[in-house]
Length: 107
Image (spheres, rainbow, N blue to C red):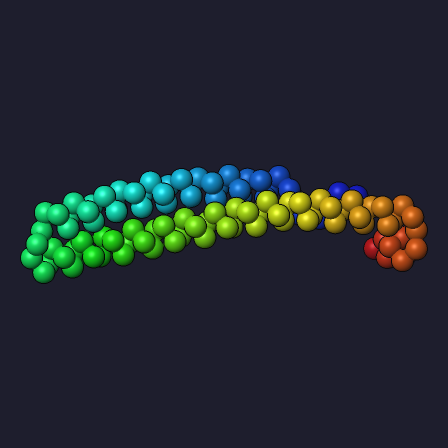
């Protein structure tokens, strides 16, 4: 009964998905913000300003989402570290006997 209880390989796959999402979100955000700048420069009418403002808001939201995805990636990496260290501690405790061995024997 050694090894992490969390499938580390699946967490690493999740990290890859998050990395891809971050890259895509940053690319979309850059395009949206570029369109906001172009719309602002091209249109001086109130409708143009509203359109530019909407693009700017979307770009800001995209940037915020990319930042959250980055934090998720860090958390997933921490999850692997905790799972692996917890597994090592549980294995060491089981090898020493005591309560951990009793619980393991009961399972």
